[in-house]
Image 1 (cartoon, rainbow, N blue to C red):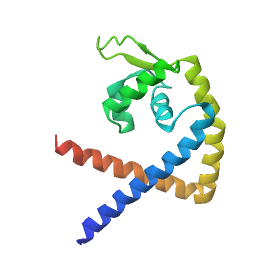
Image 2: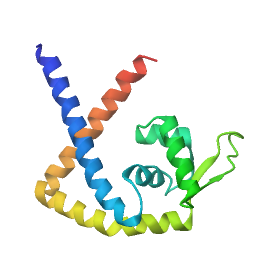
Image 3: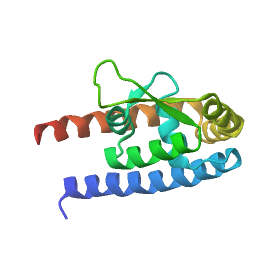
Image 4: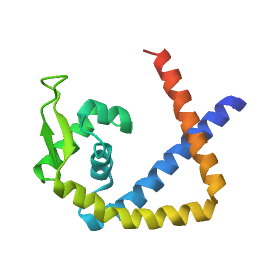
Length: 149
């Protein structure tokens, strides 16, 4: 195998493993709040501002159809609601309800404890280097993906 292919395969496999590890941890953190990791991901995307489903999908690296399914479930369970979108009549905005914000608030203490433990395990400087490396890798993939369009 060529060296570059070996490196990229290692990056991809490492990212897949990390995704699985983070999802497992997120499921455990979300469960006591009556949520799933996917619900937390979608609801978390709109905590700062309402977004259309397509915007959530782009921000979270998910499919629009997957986000739509989760958004509809969140609305059905009273954790989120659709609001009119002044920029686009058909693409409604999703925003959390009070119950959705309360569910996220139940997750926050466990998330904080896990975050403290992981940063302590890595050390703050190494955690920053890891974060920067992930951001650089994601940006490079975005640039290369844009070339295909």
